[in-house]
Image (cartoon, rainbow, N blue to C red; front, side, top):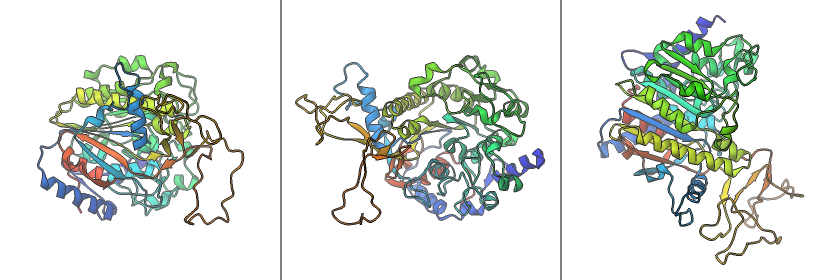
Length: 498
């Protein structure tokens, strides 16, 4: 298919733009998720009146459940002078005045994935696992079924209103969570054209990287920073870190970014990032790794050098702040999730602390009277804090009781405070076959430490923390789709209502 035709299809399906307004498709505005969430937020808004938010910054800690917050605040506290054990510490956003609990299930899964959860946040409509900013009428991995089911995102609404928009992630920028803010696809794995199925190609679906760069000028991102460089480069090209691109269509989307937008810049390493002339840069693309960016603990080892999440957040704010009308910035700490999947708590906690640092930097570099800052997660993990360790026990260490002695399990061996219900760290000689067992029997005991190649997400609620104009809307136990409407209400983005 002709590339201009593809770009036109993307533009038409994303948003109908008039003078600073956007019309939502019926598949979105007629959704009960959308309508119920909008009504809830409007009721809360009528109860308490606050000024409009000029700017909104949404932080998403991927996989950052409640137990991760608890462990991370202790981890951070135990590295500070004068701590009383670490437990008394607070992460930066835990000091915000408004907090809510958020239900995270997908429409087809009790325990969710990032594609469906971020779709709810970005569009106000809950959807299936694996699909990105399309309704759950679409079939996962089926291009044709997704057509006509595309959902308009917060980024589209903000752009239509003349605001600047930015997306930052330590994961691939084409990964599920950031992708849900600017693309629509029935398959989260279609990050590059090399991932597309024949059915997708025949029916005109495009990959996520293409959708990000080839947005029309009025609907373009101002800032996009993260990993995933290979999805933007041809497979005939080797990048600065000697990694080969993934694209089969021969397109260099980093060059397309430079060609498509005025005063555009592309950077791939720390030195180029540091050298950015903010005053003369209106569109910034930064891709700092072929795949995901490094964990915070490993960042210093990167060949080209990578900016921290805090540095990327600060630079984004500097560029976005040039727009007098305001901006919407979405920042993901994507590798908290990956640390947990690997059964590696230390890396997950270190990345959570870095997210806290980025939130503090955002707060310090914005006007609290005109900027709504929200911090949440997309889902949790089966990550536990167990035993009866004494206060101040090293959060990554063995459990010691209040008398200081090492606590042992029934097998006579010590154990750590932190653990996982399942994952690659399990050491199990043999496990009962549950095929013929009534697991609903009153006396059934759930197994623990189930061996799996990758630890799994969890289904419990996550938290939402907020400060600034519109933060009063953050209260109670809410559906994840409500977050969209909190932002829409606070920033008055103006999407057509139900």
